[in-house]
Structures are given as structure tokens and as C-alpha cells.
Amino acid sequence: MTLREMTAWTRIGLAGAVLLSTVWVGSWTICEASAQDASFTGSGPAPKNPLSRDAAAVQAGRGLYQQRCAVCHGQDARGSMASNLVRSRIVARGSDAALFRILARGIPGTEMPPQADLEEIQVWQVVSYLHGLARPGLQPPVRGDVDAGRELFRAVGCSGCHRVDGEGGFWGPALDSIAARKTSEQIRADVLEPSSKVIEGFRSVVAQAADGRRIEGLLKNQDTFSVQILARDGTYAFLARSDIRVLESSSESAMPDYYGQTLRDEQLQDLLAFLDRQRDPFVPFDRGFQNY
Ligand code: HEC
Ligand code: HEC
Image 1: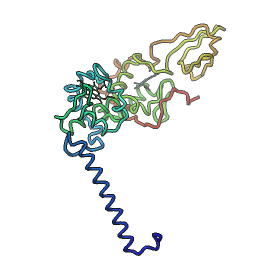
Image 2: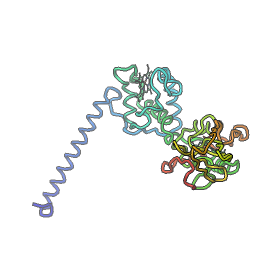
Image 3: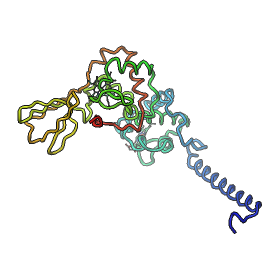
Image 4: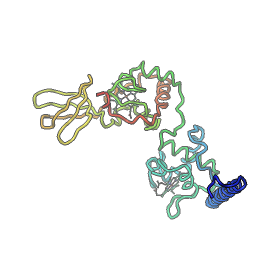
């Protein structure tokens, strides 16, 4: 008998049976989940963090972290007696629920204690705090006037070197995905102390060629046999290593380091708010190649 040949009643009966078995399997799954979590809250935690990206939750989570975790994992969660949590796979890539469970129950057989006396919502606050550190895209929005920041980005010259939405210069990296890649603290440091960490692909170099030429620019690429340098005028020099007498690289960034002095506090804040909204995960980090 095909489905088409069934009487209406048979079909309703069949649908009912399917529905019933779904409900049965579903409730069994729920029961099992709450049995597993019973040691902590009685009813299982929400599978997704209900507080994600909430600034107050992150703040509260930071407080709890300082009281309960910093002693082992370090003040900034970057490791001390116990591991670096910003780099932890579970924190950076695991599910919300997996991190919740580890925090709630601890890790048996290690020093990692269960947080059995915390409310469920407090555990989620700690999850929000850690995710904010390890997953820049999950940070709460940085405060500030985004439109004023966009305007400043042009007015103070950032757009002369950086592209956003396809507009701007090529000397620095495109910033469309900056806040999906970096935390607000890292971005602030990039703007105020560019030389503290120069990005690979943007290092300033000077090459003295064997024929006497002097080539200055950013070291875009190098291998055993060759070196590629991008000059400020946008031209590329492709040099064989055998033709280079000296290759000097600078530890200074090619980005100006005076913005800490020239920008007023609220201007900096507006600029950081604008950068914080650049979270497009589909624009990959680039090395300034695609213009050429
Ligand atoms: C007494 C020390 C101690 C305290 C306090 C502590 N931990 Fe841990 N934690 C550990 C140890 C030890 C491990 C397992 C080994 C390791 O990762 O260093 C661990 C592991 C973890 C892991 C798994 C890391 C991974 O990727 O394997 C997370 C996440 C974590 N802790 C978060 C926290 C949080 C959040 C708190 C505060 C609520 C906390 N820990 C408090 C010692 C501690
Ligand atoms: C003269 C060109 C130039 C100007 C002007 C400039 N930058 Fe940069 N910027 C760079 C270069 C080159 C790098 C990469 C080298 C480095 O890491 O210092 C960079 C790096 C950055 C980064 C890190 C990017 C990443 O992909 O991680 C940020 C954020 C940034 N700049 C923001 C700004 C802001 C905001 C302004 C304006 C206030 C600005 N820059 C002005 C050249 C410039």
C-alpha cells in the first residue's frame, strides 16, 4: 500500500504515531540533559548564552572572573599557574554550552574547581566575559558616536592608508573586518602605539641593490630567492636576493604614532566606536595585494 492508497483515517493515525514518537524522543532527550546538569542547577542551562554581547553582563563577568579565576588563569586571562583562556580552544571555538558546563562543574582530576555556588546567570556572565576576550566579534559594542568616528576617519587621514567599504588607501590593511579579528583593546593599542606590534606584510624595509639602487617600502613577500617591496607610490619592486646587497628592516611602524597626542579623548572614542562596527567576517585580512 502506498501513501496515496491509504484511507484518510489511516493517514491521520500514522501522523499521530510519528508525532507521538517525536514527543517521546524529545522529552527523553530533555530528561537526559537535565539529569546531567542536575548536579548544578536542577533544570539544564540554556544551550545558548542568553547574555551574549551584553555590556553589563561582560562587566559583571569580569568582576566574577577577578574574584574566582584570576588567581590561577592570570589577571587578563592570558595564563599564569593555569592555562591561557584567551587561546583556549573551548573558549575560542567551543559551544556556549560546553564552556558553561566546564565552568559549572570544573574539570575533575585537575585543580579547576566547580562554580557550584554561582547562579546560572552568573556563569553566563563569566562566559560572556571570556567570549568577549577570545572572540572579538562577540564583544559588546564600544560606546561612542559612530558617524562622528566615520567622519574623523577621513578628516584625520586614516582613510589615506586604510580601506573601509572599498574606499581608501592601500598602505595599511583594509579595516572592514578589524573588529571581527581583534578586540577593542587591541584596536586601541594599534591606533595609539602602532610600533608595539607591526603586522607581517607591512614591515618597512630598505633594500640596497647591487646596481646601486635604493628601494624603500613595505616588505610584502619574500622567499629563498626573491623579495617583493611595495613603494609608497604604489609600484612593486620584485628583486632577486642575489641582486640585493643589504636588506634592512625597521621595527618602527609605517603608521604615524602621534594620534595619542593629536586626538582628543572623545574623538578617539568616536573613532574606536566606528572601527568597532567594522565586523564583516567575509572580508578576509589582506596584505594590500589586491590593488595590483
Ligand atoms: C585553583 C586554580 C583554578 C581556578 C581558581 C580556576 N581554574 Fe580553570 N583551570 C585550572 C586548571 C588546572 C585547568 C586545567 C589545565 C589547564 O588548562 O591549565 C583549568 C582549565 C580551565 C578551562 C579549560 C581550558 C582548556 O582549554 O582546556 C577553562 C575554560 C577554565 N579553566 C576557566 C576557568 C574560569 C572561568 C575560572 C573561574 C570561574 C577558573 N577556570 C578557575 C585551574 C583553575
Ligand atoms: C601613513 C599611513 C597610515 C595612516 C595615516 C594610518 N595608518 Fe593605520 N596602519 C598603517 C600601516 C602600514 C599599518 C600596518 C603596520 C602596523 O602594524 O603598524 C597600520 C595598522 C593599523 C591597524 C591594525 C590593522 C590590522 O589589520 O590589525 C589599525 C586598527 C589602524 N592602523 C588604524 C588606523 C587609524 C584609526 C588611523 C587614523 C587615526 C590610521 N590607522 C592611520 C598605516 C597608516
